[in-house]
Length: 219
Ligand code: BEZ
Image 1: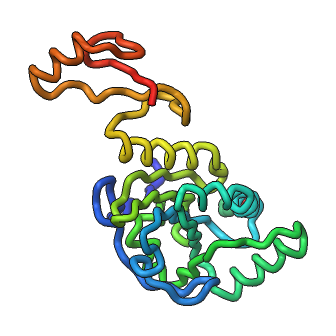
Image 2: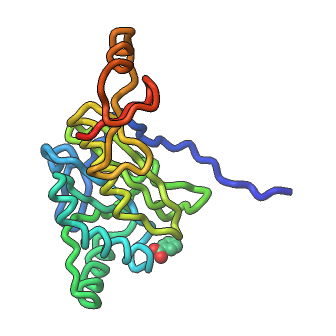
């Protein structure tokens, strides 16, 4: 007989939807997402538990790149289903052992209010710990991207920053970003939606043209 895997209906905010608002206790005091966010982008990320090795490496990695998030007008906020006392003890321990002060707030989501709103509990993996979720939320509080990692594999800061760069480039220039795109690479001219645009794509001068639907240009 196969083992029963829990299947709990969970609401996961989807790309394009408004990110659910919440008020939560954090290591920087109580805050409400919509007020705290201001006109910034937000990376809301969950980790499984305090005082665990992979999570500690992630907190150090987020802190190491903190300036780069700030340069992109991005605020970081962490979350786990641990108490505020546990968070503070862990932050203190990280500082004592590594000399690193964690500069962003961490939500103590003991009642799982935020974790449930953001579908961060994947019960087949764990009913007590959040998976490694990453929500990229734009200044209009719209979910622009979400990524979920399992408990036992840490996240890649280069990829999170690259994704933010891609989203901000898409917004600024009305283009799309190809596979493996990074800042400085050519971008994709959106495929035509009208016959006039089709003519323009066929006759126009571009930096790289494979066909009318795959055209790249330098920014
Ligand atoms: C970790 O951060 O090392 C970890 C947390 C929960 C489960 C497995 C690993």
